[in-house]
Image (cartoon, rainbow, N blue to C red; front, side, top):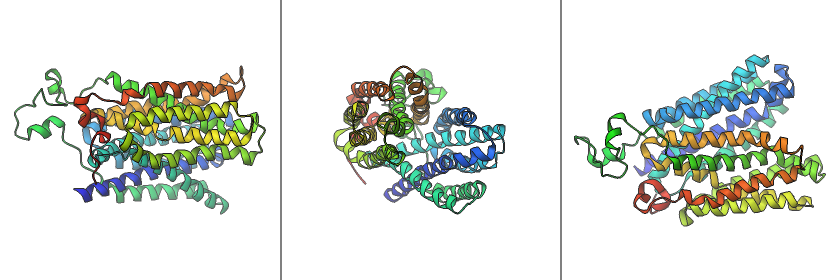
Length: 418
């Protein structure tokens, strides 16, 4: 079992890296695809909404499917769909074709996002200690590798069809190789406790379905705690989106930094996010997810406050670095908590948290942009500062009832093994 669990963990790393690599290749080729499709920046902005809409739809669809059929089935199908759809934007020669291509790519990405995170929860449950943040760190590494590969292929004047088509084939091959190592679906808690010959589940057992819902399978109503986690994900991922969309503009327009220097703002943030996620699992195992979110969000608020008030470029760069380090471990803890809250509905719960979080990421430009008509850009950052403060105060939502710690809290409450 230990060997198969390690293999499943490596396979999960592979799918996270593959997802980051596929999305990174798309992002780097946006200017080339835009030129090939013959559209303006404004039209591209509207079409990118289809990418987000497709992702949200995929997340909500695949969550219940993962609960029903298991991540072992939905992860490879989602990865194949996401990888195959990557070539579609390169083939588009007009706005309608590009819109359809982005809708398909977003749908595949949303399906893969939820299914692989649900499988990551299953792996984490097997390890009985936090491993979720490392998966998210590898996703970022996949994006960095995509930037390096795309920079080389673009310098060789490869066509987007050749490059993205090659990545699509690579994604399909990687999916075939990694799929056999995925874990099989876990038995339900009641069935696991009662055995296959039990006539009926014990209604007093932890996690057993209620009598009125026993015949209907997993619970369909999302509990308030999951919606609370989803709301925190929306706020914190909106904060991440602010860094992605506005960090470079902050240094360039507010502090007057040269373009090359301004680019370091997002680089500092992204690097701190990646390094922080590589370290978070050990911290979460020692101090628990509540502390990670409480102190991480507080640190992020402190860093972004420094950015908003910074009169010097070096201080702003330090602020973006601290902001990234603080945020790095927060969202993975929310995904993990949602997945561990109910084993039989893990996929649905993760889809709720991931879906609202993704909407928060998309809402960053829509919220901050209009505010700049009334106040300077750097002062708009106090809105995400407030969101970080709310997350820090609400971190106790990750704490579970003492009697349910072993099942609901997840690995943080268990002794480290493996």
